[in-house]
Image 1 (tube, rainbow, N blue to C red):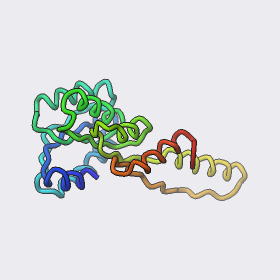
Image 2 (image 1 turned 45 degrees about the horizontal axis):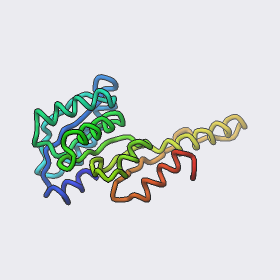
Image 3 (image 1 turned 30 degrees about the vertical axis):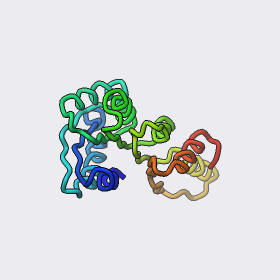
Amino acid sequence: KCREYIEKNLGGKAKIGILRFEALLPENSRRRTEGFLAEVTKLPGIEIVAKEDAWQPEQAIPVTLDMLTAHPDINVIWSANEGGTIGATMAVKQKKAGTVSVFGTDASIQLANFLLDPDNILQAITGQQPYAIGTQSAEALVKAIKGEPVEKYVTIHGITLSRTEPEKIKEFINIQKGLTK
């Protein structure tokens, strides 16, 4: 979604700041960051101007504010995890609302609500489906207890939530709250 957003709204050009969690889980952070970069750098007008470590909101707010001060031309921030995305969104709201868009990885009710916020800062997130993971895990456990065969590996596809699809966001929130399946 970030690449699409940059193509459609920024003429294919963006100066991007990245928040990672290298010091916490280097391999996971690296994989997420490399996946993001592999997609977004398909556009020739992309410049990565900052990469910082900040994975909790209370870290990510000042790190993002410093990043925006050091690189006032940043117009997109991407975060590799939920805490970084929360902090980046809050920092942009304080300093650069209307000029910087945020994208992130991980999905939660808080981030989904940020997508519905009329401030138009957080644009899209990708994440896992915790309800589906929990449901399928519980079903596998029951089968195993009963001695029934259980699949060794199960694929549960990730999700993308974008502010352009508010009904999908609301459905995600309701599922997380246990209101629907």
